[in-house]
Image 1: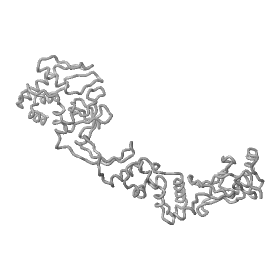
Image 2: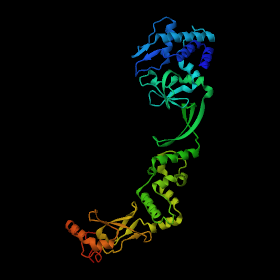
Image 3: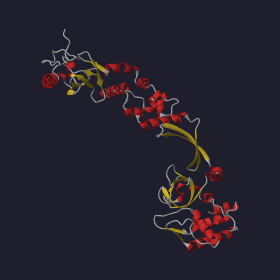
Image 4: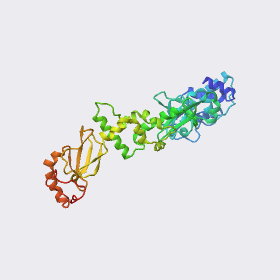
Length: 420
């Protein structure tokens, strides 16, 4: 407060500063009913002015639930007068309403900036949070200086404050304003945000786009943004997901060799900076990822010898006895071949992949494409399961081919095999 009094005297506002100092040293001159509060220091200064001029002590606007404590006003007036005498201040001078400017000299760490979209919620220049009661008229002010607040928690309740003008702040603290640069992820817009900020302590007063941000920082933030969004934000397609499933299958099956890379979603996210970063030059937003040749990127993950052996160990399709080329689904722990039952006639041995290491799980389908049997033992199915399945399907699909001995029958993708 001493600094405020001295600074205010130098600009001819010492009398008002004395009023403020007196008010802050006494109990509040305005009393409120529970649940009501008005932190505006200006209405309290007006009460001292009224007392000095022998005017009625009343609050302008008649705030509901508020009463003036006349004794406290008189005491504060006397303290103010005493301070003026000690400092050689003419108490008749000075009628500024810019109380924020005076308080900022006393409490530069309590300059408060309204949080975006949050009425009554403020950030202090010290970095601490602060708040006003929702009913307070000061709750929507862009800037305040808090003269009195409680000392509890990370968010302090403001009991007395005054509004503060940005242009006054910029002039008053010109020597303490600092520019800082930041590169951060804007999740709402899905992009890297590169800005420079003019700040007073923790408060940002102005933000501008950074024209030439550090490229390494942009890349690191972009990679982090991709991780937050999830690996699914990359330009996947069905073929690439199937490629992923094939490689993951071989990694699980051949784990003793420990040679196949981890291309699961989790594995790819963990190593994102290694395999994707080189392809993100001049990119800083999620929509830029559409330009990434993800197929080419993934091919770069596998050494050449694995690229060559992938189709042999984990083929995308299997040619079944009917001659059809059926896709293999590697999305489960055991690869699945979903094929119409009649296309497998004549095949006694369960098909395998990975050089015979892994039998396929066969989903045998009805003519309508619905599963009628799931088996990992094709020979066993022909021997014991086929008879019951045949009885059921023959009644529903009488025009189709239902031989008595499926191992001697000719496989077909048609209703019936062609006649020779």
